[in-house]
Image (cartoon, rainbow, N blue to C red):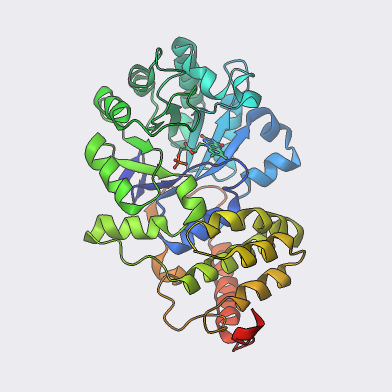
Length: 384
Ligand SMILES: Cc1cc2nc3c(=O)[nH]c(=O)nc-3n(C[C@H](O)[C@H](O)[C@H](O)COP(=O)(O)O)c2cc1C
């Protein structure tokens, strides 16, 4: 269990913001597979959301299956971050996160992201203004940091402590410096120092978790109260389900079967079509198949077929082609039990939440599931 201010989740497992990847369909997919405590939007530009730019609206899109949701904002102390935070609360955020770790020029050159690590006084004042802006709503504000800009300037422990003193309710630490980007390995001692520096707020450890036991190792070694998973989730979105099981029972359970993994890709496609339209869905799967492929053995022909596919039905057919018995859903599909494995949490109701909509979504979902499992054999092994 993990609490961030008044928001409590059963699982101390967070889906990281991964710009360009952690959109609504992917967040819903991970949540359906189970084990996700909190999921985050990709980073949102505060000007763009206040202006209502269509791209920003798409990035901030959520629905009742996507709760509790963290919206991540970036900007600097001259930007309207407090106003953007209020906007995020009004549009469904249960947690507001401030990005203090993004190393990419587009963000850092505007003095946002990781550049906030370089002037801690200004950053703490900015955080305080955001906290005050959303305080009346009760929605907690968190920060996501790296260890520092480079090895000569490790600020995360000191910064985390100061952020806590102005009301930040949790800090996520990616255990690398900005200068490192994604090179090297995550520095667990660095994360441990942040845990030691804060008084009471939870520290969430982040970096290089690709197996369930990496999460438990990180929690044990650093004392962090939760972990955030990014790239590991892109290749194995069931990692939360297995890590949750490991935390609860000491056993992560088996790796999903090949057929289960095909089912997950198929479900991802269906969610993309439903929530973003067929064109975006096909484009997304064209790119994402290589991430899925990393744990699926020799599937080069399938990856190529999906990369070249131009319709959702073509992708569905290719997936079905590779089903071991060529049926839509294997009878022993252990992983694919969305309703049974859904995460639970207690969160003050967000304005976007709507019981009737949730019911409608769940009944639409059940219909899709029935459809998906209802078809029989379509392909013969020799057709591969
Ligand atoms: C392609 C890509 C995009 C990312 N986008 C964001 C982002 O929007 N906001 C953010 O705070 N971190 C972002 N990150 C960093 C991740 O959230 C995470 O901190 C980092 O990948 C380390 O965790 P991992 O090893 O579990 O992936 C991004 C990382 C990658 C690889």
